[in-house]
Length: 347
Ligand code: SAM
Ligand code: SF4
Image (tube, rainbow, N blue to C red; front, side, top):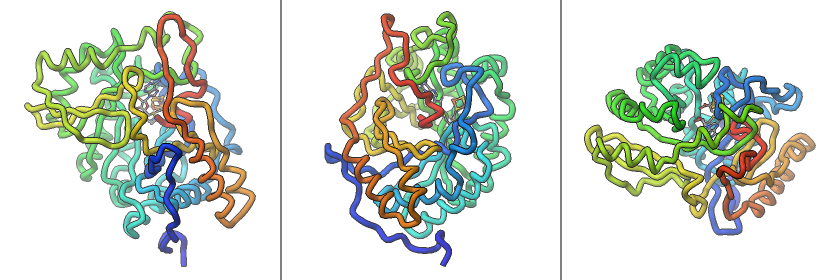
């Protein structure tokens, strides 16, 4: 029987030392990207040699192992997940776990550049929601922020996603002096399009530039408390108790009925309810976005065809999941709190 139609033998779920059940896995399927967003990457990034990146089959086997151990939600991310060759095959194979009742949700975070091409296949594979990163509706600003991106292409991708029935959530990184003047327009636009919208604070992950004048995160940092205060001047916001086990807090815009999320890892502690771990495309498992400790799953994956070593390595890693992170951005400290870029663990 092919793997994708064989029921998985479920075993005891993954529970960390703080009694949190690990039910959500984010997988960075590539560290490469067709954009170079100023807060995420340096312009001259060096990417991993292809030989170090797990194959599509290996990524599938890892995901299936996590699902067998109780993960109910998978999010593919990157780098840009839709530029990875073979990713649609991976999505189709993982999507079959939804039909078998082993997985509640398969989703992805994307920059939208390839959505026009792939929305239909995503929907057919069982994806129902996508997060699309979009920090401005101004074409010139868009090119300035992403360095290599084209706003028109992303808007086409969003239209395609909407047309096939994918629910869309826009991720908007608030950048001081860059897009803070657009927040009302974004709320209005997202309301008209029927998209949810999440504001994100810049996080100190990875070196982005040697030039501390323009690309420094202290300069980019725009606290969401200020975004919310500005929004309240114009919109009626009602706090909701919607929770995903992640760092977002949600509000509803009364005028549009749309949900607004605020991800504030730097000003709030969101760790008590953390249900997630992150896997890189080389098979490294990070138990926390804001800590360096990691576990290598590549060796147990590649040294045995049977999954018992892999299961053991995953269980051992979960026993090391820390209580929380300690990100800090302040004016005395300009080095990143964590050396790896967001494109390694996918945010
Ligand atoms: N390429 C895809 C995209 O842009 O959606 C997926 C990967 S990207 C690393 C995931 C999310 O992380 C995006 O919403 C992006 O805006 C956000 N991000 C990247 N670097 C960040 C940083 N230093 N601080 C906060 N958010 C960041
Ligand atoms: Fe690429 Fe996403 Fe990072 Fe932008 S945020 S450079 S689109 S990985």
